[in-house]
Image (cartoon, rainbow, N blue to C red):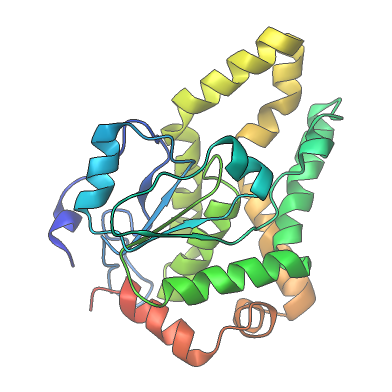
Length: 254
């Protein structure tokens, strides 16, 4: 395990949902622990110079952007010396659907649909398979989307599962987004209230957080379409034993 594992994992002031995928070294179901300092996850990287320097210090070799071309055009990733920037478009929350939401129930249904899409949409499967193959080339690597919660959260959940972490730990890690991103979420909510009033904030709130219901919708789609997670990784994402074994080797401390 890296030296960093004994301390609180690295945080960035200008990217509040940035964190180590391994936490401070999550336990695995078979009594092992995860290795920190290998894979990082984040919301978008509108970083201060101090935080850019922090990324440089951890020795990143790759930044993987899961956003759409439209999202990237608004806030391109920074250039970090010695780091390659890769783009794999994993379809997120459709902007055109967001603008037509009229109730909280519609927003929750949309989020369930987005997470099912991670599993059933070929475009998403291609992107997620490519991301995991890239991560298997070795760390340290960082992957992110806009809020670092849905597309990024699904990749992190898959990595933790592959590494042998149990579902309660995966769920707790997934839900950390709600606590860590409170400040950036409050800024978004303030903008929504400014333009549409407090009632619109209540409508949109389910799209601004993570909920176990959403993650469960994706796992349920995995079982419905592939039978189990191993078949989804193999047949849905096209990951062979070599890639899965390499990911486990990178993630596990022993």
